[in-house]
Image (cartoon, rainbow, N blue to C red):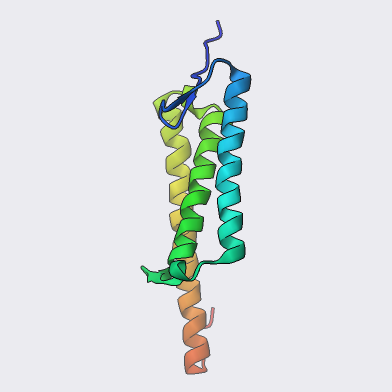
Length: 126
């Protein structure tokens, strides 16, 4: 027996009457977020060029908005909202682990390459 999908977004702030309306609502939400990203990318406001935790504030805004879009695509279009908590955790934890692993590898290799460029010799020849 099929069950009805939840017809709300933004944690129940916006409710819809049908699945079609919800799809259009999520599409409009994602389009607004994308438009904000594009406008910020084109104009690059000087106020957002300040460094925050080693990166420009504008880059942090892009990362956060991209994560919000990924969340809504997964949550609503891939129907993760309707799955069991175990499956949701497995999907999220796997992604988090792989992203942390990738960041570790990139930082380790980047540090090695930077040390080769700065010192002019290879200290570890694999």
